[in-house]
Length: 242
Image (cartoon, rainbow, N blue to C red; front, top):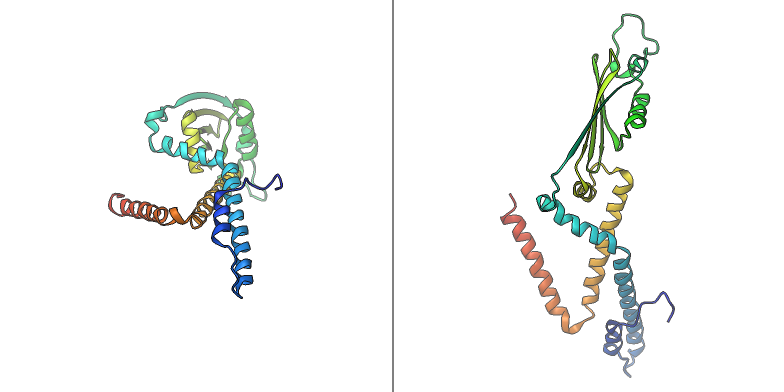
């Protein structure tokens, strides 16, 4: 047995015992099916064990955050902390001449602001984090918003003077993990993590169900319990979900 193989399981042993070849002329076909069943059972067992171990952290994370998300008051999930600051940006960044625009002609005010310079200044000066969520420009004011898990920052900039007020909101650790659970304001990389976690959970569930069919004594009660759980879930969704 190689190091990558899982330990011998009673499931594989039962497949071997239940598929003994006979002396019938079709014994060769039964022997081939027996070997195929054993290999398939080994594959399902290998996937179930090692995918479960690989996805253990993600399963545990999404299980725990399911509770904190459903009951934030139990874990002080609604606490928040505000910090305020003010500063000055270069006025030239707020009145960039539009290329090709004639004097006195009206143009889009959003094209007259050096948005990149403004955003980088806020990050350097105040350590603003999170992704840029919105940058609104009107003739008198710019509004810049940043969003992240459990975090928000909003800056209001006067275009005439360059003076701004910045408000940062921290919602605490529980809010951070709740936003990670929901994938809100977490970026594309974490979105991939959620997709991979969903695939791992699907594999774990399907391989566990497949292995149940190799356990003759537990096959019927296991399927009955699975069916009851499905019926209960559907009934709750139809009867008690508004």
